[in-house]
Image (cartoon, rainbow, N blue to C red):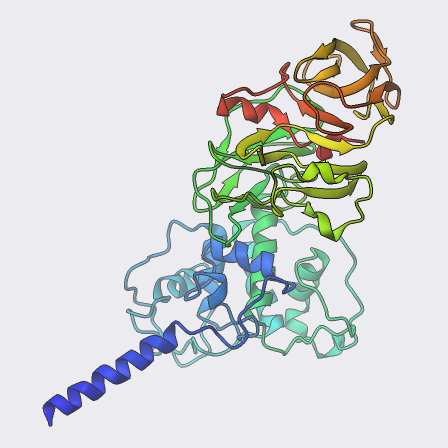
Length: 466
């Protein structure tokens, strides 16, 4: 009889464990509106139980016990106990997983009990209550909420609890909380975990990023955090810069104090990715998918498979020794047929430090958005063919045009205004079809050579083409 009971117990435990790892019914998808916020919330450990995207049920109600934990993690509080803590609430035992967070939240006046020494940790949080908790947090810790828009005229504004209206107003004017497409705010509706991820990460951005920092979250194609990647920030005004990178820890890297706009490269010795736009501290978060080290290297973000775009300008010859992962076209500047970053060429993997734009007999122009100066020119180079290298006045930006059929500019140090012709695209040097190879570097360099460290000096031309 005892053996039978033991078998039943083992069977039931197995069922419970299997259920614990099953995907939730509303598991968040990669196309969900809040997926980036959820990813960031997971990186910052705002949630109690969920540790990866597949664990997150987007429509699950956010509970009271989760509020102080999320806010303590936003604060990166070093005064929150992570061990058993007495809270003073009869329904929150000291071994509750969030007892330390609940004690922290009540000690700082952010959240309180519901009376009779009870906290009701499992009760859902309404949207207006979440506003109130976050508003108290900001007031207590001196977080200044910006005013970026006027308070919307919600269709159900009359149902917002009057005592909580200042909190709702402040969070909406800061563009942290939003209404729904039907014009309502739904103050008494329970906030979902997807909505909680949204507002907590926006508050996190206001507190840590709006002033002078850029936060970069680095993942591989599978959604796993990438630790130890070097993140370089390149100012768009090409001024002097420090080469000391920010390194990602658990997929997160934060810049030093910055102002203005920057290009961002993420790299290590094997792989590299670039953010296909200029970013600034006002763009609270930057998400980068860095390719993993496998046989076929995905393109950097922003590129799509060739089959998805019209590519009449991309000749079939560009498929040389490539597979479907390695030949891409984009609708950008002209029809481009080789992306910036890793590629396979003649069966060997190499770093391609520029952007190839197909077509011959086309005028190649100064696209730097400023007057540049002829720095270096050469005809009939075995590799680069006829090429022109331009530099800016301070020597902090170099743009090189290769494989030209002819050069329009020939005199060293001659000024080349923005939009002026540099040469005519062609098929000279080591070229397998008429195209322009254009590359952007922040140092006088034509090729990184075998040094992985030199790759950091090259930027994705899409960022700087104007």
